[in-house]
Length: 551
Image (cartoon, rainbow, N blue to C red; front, side, top):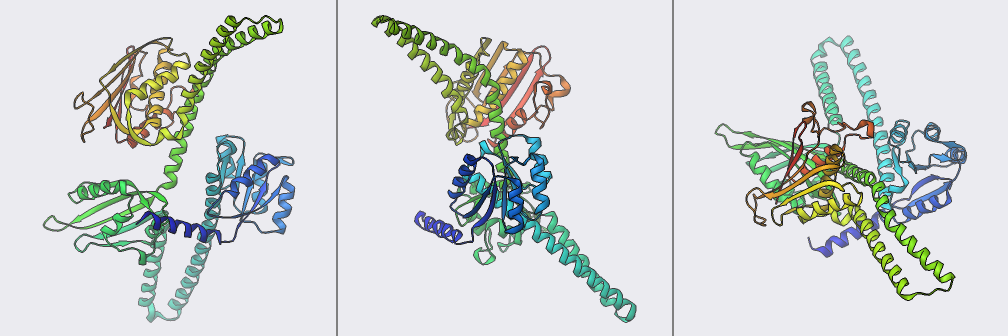
């Protein structure tokens, strides 16, 4: 589709969305600055409008909720007349059918879980919120509440219909014995209806499909149409039509997976789809092929699940772990910055004292200013390295130099001062490039290097090996791979723990505040790069992590 046509379609979609009735929001926030900031973020929304009423007390909010209808409540947990979970419980008790989104300055995971348990639809931390996330959270909260209400209503109506029909059948059976056969048919239909209901509940957000390979006819369930944002009249009902909806960068992967499935391989793949409005969703497909008597594939059936929200949550988890890792080294980096700051302060005091006494010594002042310039540049290098770790641009996938990424990660750790008593041995085999995210690979290397340093107590030997498996050349031919080995000479990992290091929430650092997500996230990142990671360890001699990535 030409780019201009897509832009016009997107403009039309946004224009149509703006015609909808604005979302009536009750904002309960006692901080005027935060309230103004939230209103500004809501005003930036392009796909929906908001009608916001702001109050700064919970009692005022409860009064308005009795008098006026609202679509959503945006609730702060620190109010003059209420704080913590009590505010959520009181608001939810007053209007249980209105969704509540908590927006707090507290990034407390336990508090968030409790707030959701007490009736909130979502929990947002103010420091992590932008306009896009706030608007999406509000819309999702409203949609979830509407879906729950609709599901409950449908369930109640169905239960009523079942009770009514069962009563009719009982009366008919008692009065008309000659209609027993008819009653059996009705009961069979009811049983099928219950099975369909159970299936529908079981496959929430999952649709099923059926492809007749011989005729190329494709059947979708209603849920798949919803996932793809289409109606049956908008879809060509063929395998080729489906491929047109797949993200262009993922089509070859789909074709390869289907081709392998037709030869008996399992079909299981995650890929992206492009909706008519240009938005992108992530889905997971599963399928199996039925073969004819002569071994030819005749039919393929399977499911599609919308995993967009799951992927977004994974990204949030990766960012949280990334910031946690940065926080761990922040104190050490602060110490490294204090040294140049002390030199700057001393030079500044020396200049100031002489100026006050009228002792203008040009040569001495030039020396002092030169020292200040050098120390400022040193501070800037440290902060620039830290900021680059969380900069969004470095998380886009492109060809990156593995050795460069390792060196930048070591540089960041070096600013913390943890390498002063460590012998870093680098065995780099040329320039090695892989297609991946520089930021995510930095996160992997940082986790592994910090773990190694923790194991060695910040003293010992740290060996880094990189090379290509198929040779030493810097080619990008399909099939060649790069391996990276990070080895320490620490005490090693006990044999009973080696097989668990990549399990979520497994940690040997619970006393130090570890929650066991670092290596689990490392494993997730490497898998997302179509790579593998292995660990080997020998007690008393150290541990080695070996990563293999396709070029």
